[in-house]
Amino acid sequence: MSVKIPMAGVIGSPIGHSRSPDLHGFWLKRYGIQGHYVHLDVAQSDLEQVLRAMPKMGFVGANVTIPHKETVLGIADIVTDRAALIGAANTLIFRPDGKLHADNTDGYGFVENLRSNAKWDPKAGPSAIFGAGGAARAVIASLLDVGVDEIRITNRTRSRSDALKAEFGSKITVYDWVHAADMLEGAMTVVNSTSMGMVGKSEFNISLNALSPKAVVTDLVYTPLRTEFLEKAAQNGCQTVDGLGMLLHQAAPGFERWFGVAPVVDDETRQVLLST
Image (cartoon, rainbow, N blue to C red; front, side):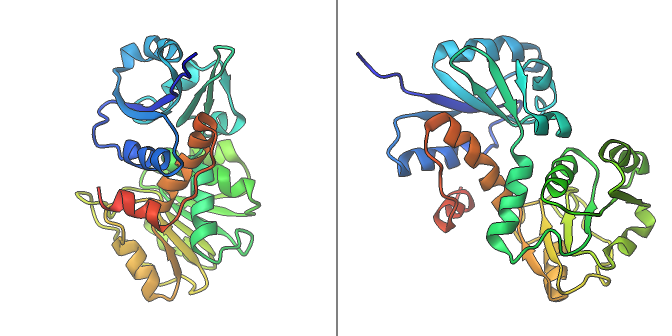
């Protein structure tokens, strides 16, 4: 009797740019696992039909990216609390009973990246986040989960920050964008969750002069790896953590669930993505 070879993939549209197949392919080879991980370009109108068919094709799960991360919550049979809280899923498990299980590991990836690459105490003081989009939601949920008492957020469109405060509660403090620099006073964890500083986007132009040198500063952007935001923070004496580690760590729980091995995120793993 032949053993089924497990398959997984990343679903989005467009999806050719995704580096996830390089990462998961590396782990499959490293651990000697017979399996495959592929790009899957799926239109929004076809998403549910494709997801229902995938288990019959030998798929054990998938990652989900733009534009499907929110839509999939309405299709899944089981949604984890953290995926529901964040309002999006990035990891799907096709269960043996046929049910579609949706989770979000972005917050896990964020926390593990800081824990692995800095001397980070989430309870050392307030956190400050630039941006109020989907990535910020995952960061806020994970910071609250590890015990941060105060989270300061700012966004160009104030209403989006206010919406997050209404949803996540009294530990959230909103700052107007024009006063964004003020929220850095005493902040011990500082996060850029905006696209500012990314290749092809506008530069990060907010003053970081109020940063404490004891702060841990991270940018979710990883193209370029060393953003101007991180460079300025390093000049202030801060520990800095680039965004590539979050991408690596958020992938690990899915790989373990699909292929049965907990992959190690190390320098060799980073190099796989840096060299592609």
